[in-house]
Amino acid sequence: MSIKKWQKISSTRIFDHPRLHLLEDTVLLPDGKRTTYVREAPVTQHSVAIIAVDSMGRLLLQKEYSYPPDTIMWQLPADP
Image 1 (cartoon, rainbow, N blue to C red):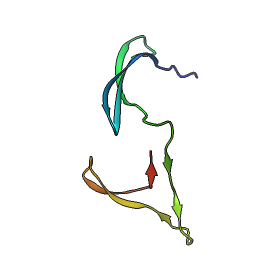
Image 2: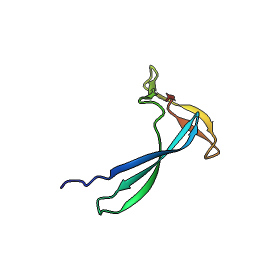
Image 3: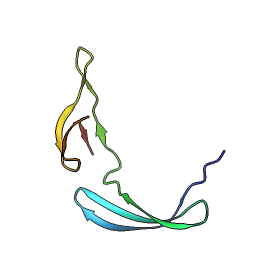
Image 4: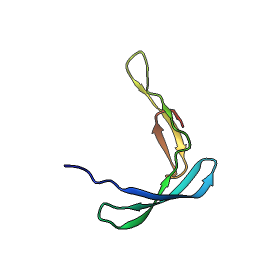
């Protein structure tokens, strides 16, 4: 079974901020319909996440406040 993919027709940058860039793509769906799709534009082509394990085999996580969900979250240390 082959997967029919969306075809990008055009892309417009609709929002720029030092930490967030949004694009609006006009796409052609497999059924022939056109639609728009808003997505986050990658800021870099790579990122790094670290999985830290101590000498006893325990996974080390960082606990920090996250603004959007307004809660304290456990996360892997990462740098975009």
